[in-house]
Image (cartoon, rainbow, N blue to C red; front, top):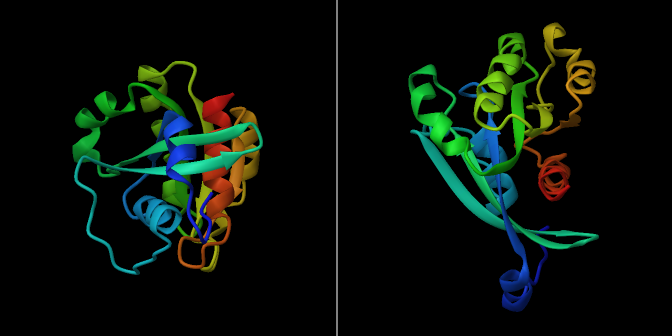
Length: 177
């Protein structure tokens, strides 16, 4: 969790480090979510992630501080062969879709299967992003999908910041648990 004074170096040094991944189709807002959380910034135009990018952020949970190593996966199909190696060691994954794009929601099961090949007991958080925009009819079953796979469901807007902190706190709790 971010604070105005920032976490102390001492609490950061004592925090356990846990890897989490953020996966989903290209243009669903994965990088924007990570940047909003870690840097407090939102840019409406972004350059495509090539391969993977990662940032580290301290999250304070009731059980103590956790240092999340947040891995932002490239969503384009041409990077699929690279992604498997980057999933290794992750403790939880966010499956992100764009609530304005029903195809991105329909592809979540493919993303989940790709991750489960590498991490068979992976924990998930399903994320409906871009809630500040008009919602598509094809994404209204997201909470049901999340429940069916035993995942949490969170709605976010990287543009407004709504739900972003909850998303990463939920990922941290999944990674610890």
